[in-house]
Amino acid sequence: MRRVIFIVFLSTMLLQAGAQSNLRFQSQNYIGLLEGDNGSAFQFLSINGIQKKTWFLGLGSGIDWYLYRSIPVFLSVNKDWKPSNRTFYLSLDGGANFAWESRERNRFDNFISYNFTPGLYWGAGIGYKLRLKNNGDAITLNLGYNYKRVKEERVSPTFCNNPPCPNLTERYDYRLSRISLRFGWLF
Image 1 (spheres, helix red, strand yellow):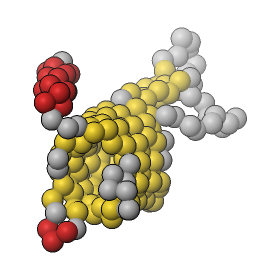
Image 2 (cartoon, rainbow, N blue to C red):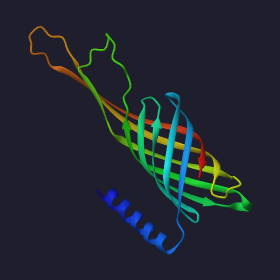
Image 3 (cartoon, rainbow, N blue to C red):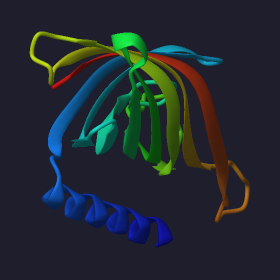
């Protein structure tokens, strides 16, 4: 609840500041490669928000295929800095990760049910913006670290001689750390 109040407060302050200065809409769209202990996977992200001078604040979502397919929903903050006419930026993302379970049951699966619950998602990185002729457009390259958490609960039947038989419940908590390399287009 505190996070929601903080986000609403921050958004209100930025919108009030926008009435007094120039804010502009910006969309950041990325395709990324993730590498970690569980192999490699792709990630697609879209972040939309407002840019004010060297600061960007936006809401993002996408699809993350690392281990289990999931949908991260997050708040993103970027800070640009321009040493010698080059534009670098720091990015910080934080929010929730919702599993999009895609395993198909076959005749060997004996689960009564299995479900996933949302977990934490966050990432941090450093990037470079290559400005195009239109000053608002850029191609970006971002190297960072991502973390997502996926929780799973499986319920399966057990065999017994005297019914009713209890079900076996297994809980898994996946904490997935990975390196990310993202290519993007800002407009």
